[in-house]
Every structure is written in structure tokens, then in C-alpha cells.
Length: 123
Image (cartoon, rainbow, N blue to C red):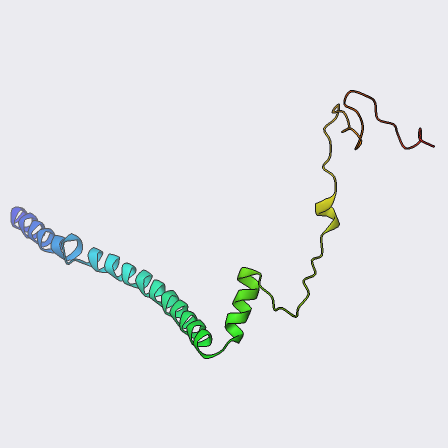
């Protein structure tokens, strides 16, 4: 009797194996379902991108406003009756900081090797 029970249990395990771990088993179904969800999310992002591109193409085909805006921001173009004004940030123009022990650069017009006059010495 004990041998018959073990044999039936072994057959039950052999029958269950393809259901859980086989080619079309539950594990494979779960993996494919996960891949399907990932692909659906990627497709949604691509559909949104395509809608945005379609709108941009429609704007470029129908009017000059989109073309003008693109020329201004991407190519830096302007109309002939406009004036270009550029503001420079003072922090970007500031002189670089010298390392300790590095000699100061020579004053403009100073002879190389000759000491430069300071502002107080010139007074």
C-alpha cells in the first residue's frame, strides 16, 4: 500500500511539472505577461511622442509662426528690422583666481622681467 501511494504521488508530481515549469506553463505565462506590460508602457510613450511630432509637422506646414520661432531659438536668426542685445553676467567675466604663490600677470605694456608699477607707486 505504501509503495502504491508513493507511485501515485510521483505521477502527480510528474503531471504537475509541465503545468508549472514547462514550455507553456504558468511561469512562462507570468514572464510573457510582464513583458507585455513593459511593451505597452513603451508603446504609450511612443504614441505620445508621435502625437507631438504630428502637431509640430502640422504647425510647420500651415503657418510661418512655427518656422520663425524655430529659426530664432535653434539657429539664432533675427529679422532685418530687429536689434540684437546681449546681457553678460558679471560673474562669468570676473578674472580667474590665482593659486597661492603664483606671480601676478604683468601689466599691459610692461617689459618682460621688469617689475610692474603698482597703482599706489604711480601716485
